[in-house]
Length: 146
Image 1 (cartoon, rainbow, N blue to C red):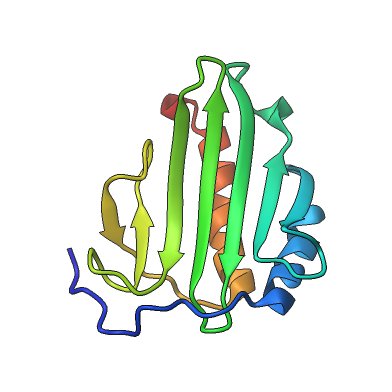
Image 2: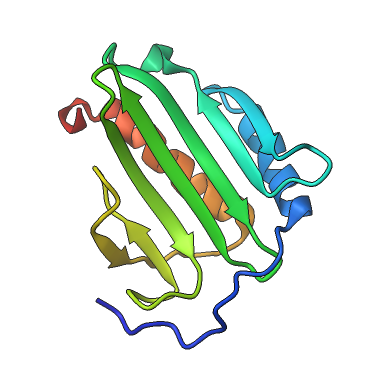
């Protein structure tokens, strides 16, 4: 485990411009069925992405990505699959102040409990988005993970 972050304890306010940028890119992706903002499109704090489950095994009833991006550059991309037996498979890419790992880290599947340091070549929103979507696509092609 890496050293805990010595940064401020706040992630800051939502970066609405970046959330809208990510929404435009995600809405155009073939894997995505729908996107929405919470609480609304005028003042988004969360971008919710629903994936088209036609590409998933029949046991997967829903798949989503919850995206948060803050004006401080902090972010969270939480990927969650729900199965027909109501179990979940999830993981998360994060950059935020914490005491458990370095500022940039990954919560491992299947339950996001194990956390490892994460090295990203770039923390630009579109590069992080690309990293996350590549991982989702890899999950769909690797049948051994189901």
